[in-house]
Length: 154
Image (cartoon, rainbow, N blue to C red; front, side):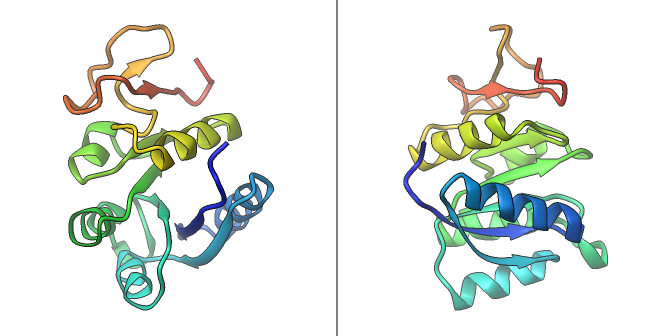
């Protein structure tokens, strides 16, 4: 398990945000804040330091979490794990995501993505090679050692 990380959550569904906060706390991490827009991510990052962000793609007010990921990774060097039921892994990686989890995902998958991202493994443990060992069509070329997970855990 990764050392204690300070994590920002970007999620517009309050129930999901609360659940993620509880899970991350149970895994030994500290949630420093929850925002519901891409602009909220950028503003928060300008006020407080954190180790990584867990970002949904479709956020409030029509904002796009991938814009926030581009800002975090490209300008600030803060890794992001993208969690979405609507976006493709290739879009998340193109935006600079360290990992991608398709909603709904298992807690073990989130924990693995956190561990891999904290360790600096390219692809953060998702998007490259499914657990069956067959290359994924959605895999970014820069994530050769990564894994991908399906909602059913296959």
